[in-house]
Image (cartoon, rainbow, N blue to C red):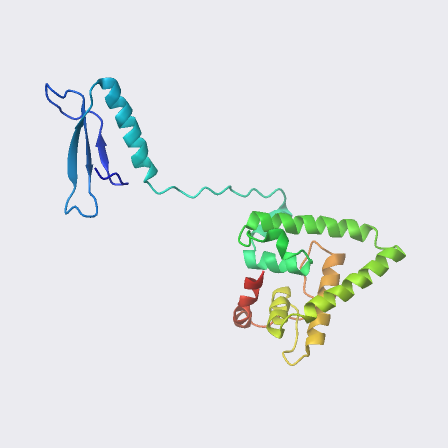
Length: 221
């Protein structure tokens, strides 16, 4: 007897005097030209009930299971705005915030997870900004900026263009890598001072067509 998602179980099929506790299954195996009905008989009503229950459970297990994804409920307007962005945009934002890719490895398309990381990063930046007037904080910012420049220098020109496109920072394709890096660092400094925004420094970005050309940059995260 073939049990699959199209199988039809009749719990109380018409039997006879010798086999009063009958049930039937109509199904079609791959090698069958048409559906086949099989009449089965149990020794008692109780046994038939056990068989019918087990077979019905087996048939249900063959049905395609709907995807169960928890519905994201933004806790604030800021989270709701972030959730409107694509997973790629969120990963780029995390990159700007120097949040390591290891924090979301395996969850690159998990928008609730990415949004949560962005929110955590913004809170950390706000707390850091509150102590930004100390000499130690100034030294730390200089050190972090130096590290950030070194990290960006390791990127390709295409990757730097992709970052600048998303940040909506105006630039010239003839600019050297060092100039592109300087623009990104300047924008990140602005974001650190105002972490709740993603406002461009000035001007407009290149066209959306150009942005698509460099979209493969997101695949590296």
